[in-house]
Each structure stands twice: as C-alpha cells, then as structure tokens.
Image (cartoon, rainbow, N blue to C red; front, side, top):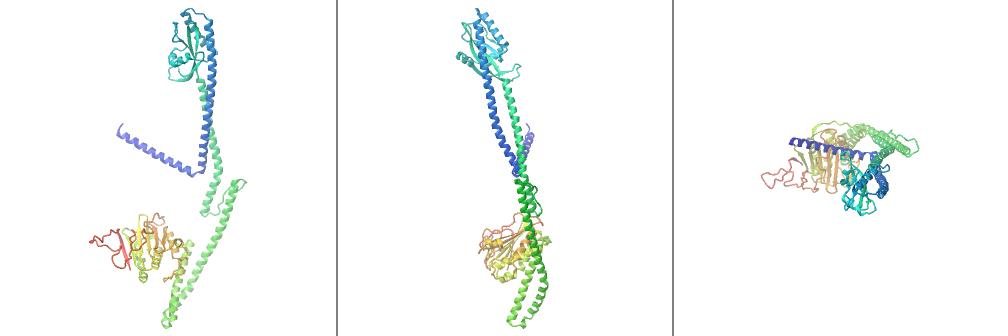
Amino acid sequence: MSHGLVTRLRRVGARARVVAVRSTRRAIAQWRSSLQLRVVTTALAIGFAAIAVLGLYLSTSVRDGIYEQRLAAIDREAAALTAQVSRNFSETQTTSDGELQVLLNDTIATLGAASGSTAAEYFLLQEEDGTAQVANVASRADLTDLLITNELREANIASDDDQVLQAVGIPSRDDGGMVSPGVIVGSTVQAAPDARYEIYYLYSLEPEQETLSFVHRVLLAGGFGMLALLGVVTWTMARQTVTPVTRAATVAERLAEGHLSERMPGARGTDEMASLARSFNEMAGSLQDQILRMEELSAMQRRFVSDVSHELRTPLTTIRMASEIIHESRQQMDEDAARSAELLLGQIDRFESLLSDLLEISRFDAGAAVLDAERRDLRDLVMSVVEQAAPLANSKDVRVSVRLPDADAAADFDPRRIERILRNLVVNAIEHAEERPVEVTVAEDDRAVAVVVRDYGVGMTKQEVEHVFDRFWRADPARARTTGGSGLGLAIALEDARLHAGRLDAWGRPGQGASFRLTLPRSAGVQVGEPPVTLAPASHEPGLRTGQIPVVNPPTGPTPTAIPDLSDPEGAVGLPATDDVEVH
C-alpha cells in the first residue's frame, strides 16, 4: 500500500471521527435540552430491557418444550422400532452368513419403508467381537463413520437394553456445507444366536428448528412492535404533558420581554393542565396590573422630577444673579454678612449641580439619553481630567500618579460622558485619600480599554461597596465634603458606562482604600468581556509595587514610578514598558 493511500485513509478516518464526535455531542445536547425526548428514550430503554428479558424467557421455554417433547417422541418411536426388529430377528431363522446378510438388508429396507417412522436414516452394525462374516448395513453408508463414533458405540454396548441418545449435526446430501441439527438413538438387538448387532436411528430436528426460528421471528417482530407502540404512547403522553409547560415557558419569556398581554392558552377545562393555565394567567394578570401601576407611578415621579428641575431653572438663575451681586459687594459688609454671602454663593453652586444631576438622571429614566460617540484616545482624556484635579490634589496634599500604556487606547465613546465619569472617580479618590497616594492606570487589549482609579484612604466595607452606586447614598452622611456633591455622581457614572455597553466596578477594604474600574469596548455597542486590568491589586499596602498600578508613597527619594538610572545596576528595577506621570 502506497504512502499516499495510507495518508488519505488516515484523513478519512480522522474526518469520520470528527463527524462522529460532533454528531454525538449534538445528540447529547438535544437529549439534555428536551424533556419530552428524555421521557421517551427512558421509557424505550426500560421497555426494551423488559421485552428482552420476557423474550429470552419465552424463547427458552418454547425451545425446551419443543425439544423435550420431540426427544420423548423419538425415544418412544426408537424403542418401538427396536422391539419390531428384535421380533423379526427372532422369527426368522438364518443358517448361514449369506442368509444373515439378506436379513439385515431386508430389515433396513423395511425400516426405511415404514410409514410410521420419522427417522431419517438407519444403521445396523455388528459388534466388534462378533464372529459372523457379515457387512454392516446402513441407509446412508457415508454417514456411518461420520456420525457413529467409537464413544457412542461403547456407550451403546455398555447400556445393555437401554437406549442412548446423542446430538449430532447432519450434513446435507448435496454437499453444500449446510448442517442441520439431529439426534441419533442407539440400542442393541440379537440377530442370531451368535450375532449381536447395534442398531442406530438418525432423526432430523430441522422441522423443530424451523418452528423455533419462526417463534423467534414472531417474538422479535412482536417485541419491535411493542417498542414502537410504547414509543408512540409515551411520545403522545409526554407531548400532552410537556406542551403546556413549553407554552408556559414561552409565555413567561414573552412576559419577561415586556409583552404583558401574553396569556397561556388552554385555560378551559377541569383537568390539571387547565388549572395550571388558569393559575398562570391569573398570576400574569396580577403582575401586569402591578407593573402598569408601578410604571405609571414611575412615570409620574420622572415627570415630577423633570418638571420641578425645569421650573427651578428660572428662580435659580435669578437667585444666582442676586447672590453674585451681593457677593461682589461683600467688602462693604460686616464680617458676618460677608461670610454669609460667600456661603450663599457656594450653596447655590451645589444646588445648581444637584439640579443638573437630577435632570440627567431623569433623562436616563425616561430613556432619552443619547450617546454621541466618536473615536478618541482614552489616555488624552485621562491626562486632561487629572490636570483639572491637580489644584484639589494640592490642597489635600495628595500625590496623583498616572500610568499609561505605550499602545493605542483609542475607542468609540462620548467624551463628555466619559470625562464626567473620570472626573467623578478622580475627585472622589482625592477627597477620600487622606493625604495618601492616588493611582490612575490605563490599560488596553484588542477588545476593550479600561481605567482604574485607586486610593489608599478610608476605604469601604463590603456592604458599602454594594450600595456605592445607589442614588443619594453616602457611606458616612456626616463626613465633611469640601467640594460639595449631590449623591448622584456615581449613579450617573454607572448609567453613562451602561450607555456605552461598558461596565463600572468597585472594590474597597476599610483602612486599605478603594478602587474603581471603568471598562469600555473598543467599538461602540459591543459587549465587553474580561477587563484588561484587575480591579484590586494583589497587594493593598501603599508603597509596594502591585504589578499594574504605580505607587508614589514616599514623599522624598526614588519611587517605583520614577525613571530608573540605567547606569546604576541597583536602580534598574525592570518596570513594564509604560509611561508613568506624576501630578502634584
């Protein structure tokens, strides 16, 4: 066989294995996903086992019954034939070997012509110690040495007057290699005073074998028929049971998609399925009423917030103009009035910020938020936000470090919304850093870009992390906030991230700081997978390298974010290929 043919055969075998594996997997998946198919296959498996056991029992019982009855009939018939032959021998006087030979031949001819005998062949063999010079006689001489073995002859002679039976295979007359089952019966007769002969009868069991084969075919056909009937019955019953459940699942999915008017059919009747349909429809109707009432209440609330926010615009503008005039004239006031003018202007700024946040939240709730995406590099936006927060960081004595990747971090996003998210995260980190470092890391991969803002301040508990994105929620309502705040910043940031099909994650530990991660897809609307940077570093201690976030804790001396002196072997710390920027 050539090498090319062997290679082709291996390829064909490999393809066949792949096709077999795929087909098996599809069949397993189909079996797991269909309750009806599982019920039918289970019923068929149990039915097959039961029918196989019953068929084996019936086949064995029928076989034993047929053969036992046939062997009993053969034994009786052989005994009668032997008795007849013995009488013939006793009634016929032979004085020479020639007369004995004629007697033996006539006996075989008489047995073969007997109408009541069912034996196929007859054999008369002289015992080995016989003195008569007479040849053995058989209806088929070619079968004598083939079927009558020495062991059978010895057993026949030793049995005296009892008959011996032995199962044999009878070859066909046309020498076609076919063998039919049979049994040979042997006994002994006295042909002359000094001549004892062995007589053998060969019976064919082929009719019984054909009968048994017919019974097997009937049992097999009946078994397959019973399996088919069982499969049809089980499939019908399973379909009657599973179909309402499938309809209920479909209606439930439609309800989950917002089609509240969907109802389950088949509610008429008194059976269990009709009761299930009525209960399901009543539940769906109750849910629809409650959801509609909640939607109406929510719409009223959103409309109220939007209307109030818009209506407050005009008086707020008037109050701001008046407060600015008062603030400009504070030099002419006494100390308490001047301080009040400053506080008034600051609170008006917070009120205006709260009003803007309320309007933004109402747009998210009403589904009116629009994404104005464009291709921008996230690194530039991060640097812009950090530079804007530099004055606040200086006033808080907080050092902010930025780590940027060398690779392009461009993505499709709305610059205004992403800048608002980053500004919120950076300002919050500075506010809560408690004079400890704040780290900003930008990372990217083929599918997404991400920003992690990490501080080492007061941190958050697990319960606080779970509520940090809730509206108007604060971990400590009594905490001083020098930059104001409405409590809606992180809630708006989360909605902005979702609008980009991105994600905003939070992590915190009390006394170890907090970490926020914004992940955005490279292409607008594409769901992000695994973020390209971890949310919380492996080490939470400031001053230790974390692997992806630079730490700028020591106020003096070299820092992990400083550019090492390549001429100093001890200064080459093997930093990743990124750009670290410190903002003071």
